[in-house]
Image (cartoon, rainbow, N blue to C red; front, side, top):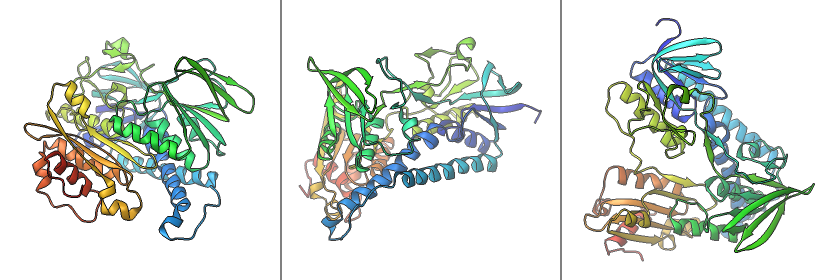
Length: 459
């Protein structure tokens, strides 16, 4: 290989970038990954992994609180927040080191620094120009703050800053009731922090099945989390020891105060300074536009992950990166977005894949649904976690499964069944003829399918 020359240069070392680089190496491409911060990107360093590590600690805290229900004598004497954060840091470090090992194992060069596009075949980094046959842009996204007066200050933070806190806040107002806001609300409440969620929409978790969003709101109420829906934040005021969040709801003004304010209102594309506009890459609001093969408007340049605005999830980024690389290698692949699972890690997990009933009906489909309550599921009852349900959405004529939505224990794992069902174009009858283990929470998925067929057994 000539010096500074590659078959592929990947800009961004997150889930979209490093997975694509490894797949490229498997296909025989000489590959380099350029990353200006940390391998693993947002997901491993300040996103999915640290948050879910904290979620596990929160789950342990809740289990100890409820131990008497299971006939076990115990008591939660406190939360050692610094120890919780050290454990989180340890998990992150192990996984980031693992990514470095995988790149080395697959003979992918890691080039730290900030990349700049010069052409469809040249990338500048650290004063050097690297030449390549193909470029994959996978630079991800970062926290976006809305234009609300007062959003600057030590105690007005985003999710990245929250994950770096040394002490547990006594109270917090969370602006934004999407996935990030809801997950942190659940985690911090379990640690003993007083939480208020302020959301401008009339429901939490915009874009997810409405029954799941409503169920999460009920969870929060039961957990002592104050939820203000349909509330438009007007300003944040520093009052010294506390921050006051002023909002308008139903035509009236309200105020809620807390030690900290978390802003979790969305993400923006990390495209500034890359040189995309100079090369004529088609953009929209900072996001790179791609086709189903992950090709940009400039031949030889591909993009995947959050930078494209598609899915905005780590697993979507990884799959998009693989699709891009395989197309570079002459393998005709398209990114299919009809079966992308979404999970919200709150006390009672919620997960969703495919279409909701409302989405299917708006698309002109005649659908049938089936629902099964976990109150009738033996394993959930034995676990003491039977407050949940599974809903399946299917095409009425052919019974093709279009969506699966659930709340309850193991939802983050079981949604993979729904993902496979939709991706494999299974019918309700295909699930009916499969034998599921008993007792298992997964039985609720089969029962929901049976309900859609009009022959549910345990309800």
